[in-house]
Image (tube, rainbow, N blue to C red; front, side):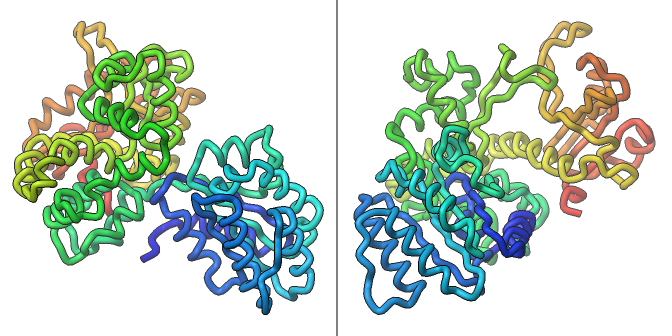
Length: 471
């Protein structure tokens, strides 16, 4: 199943339609759907497609040679001594083609890390051959740090050769309905809170099973495909997976500053920032500062697990690993993961979903339930309320520093709610963020707010229910 990625596909098709040399760089962490996107794009296109493996340069070059022979329908395999000669062979043979073609080099970092000269050889091939051909090159990779520094970076030999780049992000919450179309709105929010927007995880869902069954089968079963997924990914990507796992476990347990994370994970305090930075690069962790503060200067930064599935796994699945291994996973799940703690956790992810909805509607002036202005800054605010002399926070804040407009949002994922009390708490926070004049208020809730409360605050607060998020 291929879901979403309309904008990315449109970009690739636009590149292909130009009938001139194009080079697109596609990167993003594992399981995010890079290969699926490329496969969807090249379907019915003449394509030389090679995927590098984590093997020696000689093995990858041999596999590349096989793909070249198949593409050009050669009776025997060419004999290449290095990547340069293979690339030059493609250029020479391609001059005889009468149609546009795509050259895909998937997992480029695997080959380049085994052959340091490959980026330079690719650059020479582009400058003295490929740029004169009717072709499109796609370089892709899961190692985001390598792709940004050794392919896109200023010091890279390939710098300036790309004509477009796509950093593939997880799907947003609305995509869940494509994978489990019979599920309710509440279950779709539970699914997103549990599995996030990573396509690989979502494709494992059984559309005919309910939410609890899918979670038990995939996460709390010894044979479940995802029950060890985070550790497998860390082992594939990092040299010290156990230390990174300890950092993630500490964050999932509530540690949010580098000092406390280091204490609870057992990582050297002098090294913790390095581990956090790498987890940020992998898209697993985010460093957050209060809305309006400069990230590079703020001393109030807090860390959280960015990927919902990793956040869920470390909070609910990791503590149950012994029970899962002893075939008691379902009982552990019902004790640890299907309770009030899970409801609280979903409430945190509900804020993420509400922010995605806001970003989707950002700037749609005049439309019902849309953001009332074009916001250019987004985030969450926390700090001291000098009037009440207590710490407080605002779940979601959108602002435009140029127009001095602000949108403050409260998100409540509760079955019962004291509506007036909750709305007044949001209204009391107006003015805590300085430098803004026109302030709008929005209140997100699990169930629709009563007609009486909506009439009471008509024109002052916009109310959005979970159902409306999927409208």
